[in-house]
Amino acid sequence: MVTQTPELPFTGLTLSGVAARYANGTEALRDLDLTVMPGERLVVVGPSGAGKSTLLRLMAGLMAPTSGTIRWGNATAPRPGSIGVVFQDPTLLPWRSALGNVALPLRVRGVPQRAAREAAYEGLRAMGIADFAHAVPAELSGGMRMRVALARALITGPDLLLFDEPFAALDEITRFRLNDDLLALAATARVSLVFVTHSIFESAYLASRVLVLSPRPGRIVDGLEFPPQDPAGPSFRTAEAFRLRTAAISTALTRAMGEGP
Image (cartoon, rainbow, N blue to C red):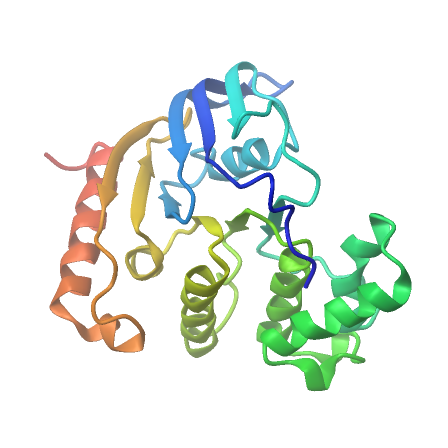
């Protein structure tokens, strides 16, 4: 894979007093103060329409806030290639092979074809699907397509990965495996994660910190910090610590909806 520029380490992403209102008058987010730290696994939960996807678009630099400021380290815009985004739909080009889809961000940036394809193949190998490098998306399962999307998001060596409910449409077994892969990736690649989900169980498994948003306009109404998983891995799902996490997140969500004490 292509590695990030070493002289520009990721020092965090900061939102200060951020609000987002769309042209139709919909106020999606209000008065957000938030910092994403290097190496953090931040999971965002909240009711539908709370502005979670809008928050990711702001973090990716795909839209500007209506008010407030966003800083990527010391910069007012993200460095090219420093942020990877994985959506609920893998958004793969149907006429390109898995290899071609993963190589695309490098080709767009002017990387020669051979170097881009070599890096893409390595990315697919890391995701465990190198044998399907020449398959088009229609020939891949849902889980495989998501692995291709993840390899594509990683190809530029990003500092920050943003996930917008990427595993919601997958079966539970595949979702568990991809959650495991994501934790392994976070541990080895030293990449920061911001993950949006509606699943309490997924948030409890992935997060080092959970943020709870209110109904629209989304505001941060609660935050829960968790120690690193011990023991890490699939066995954590049956641990008492995992049950306590899910209970705490469920309680916070209930309060956010105004349905609890």
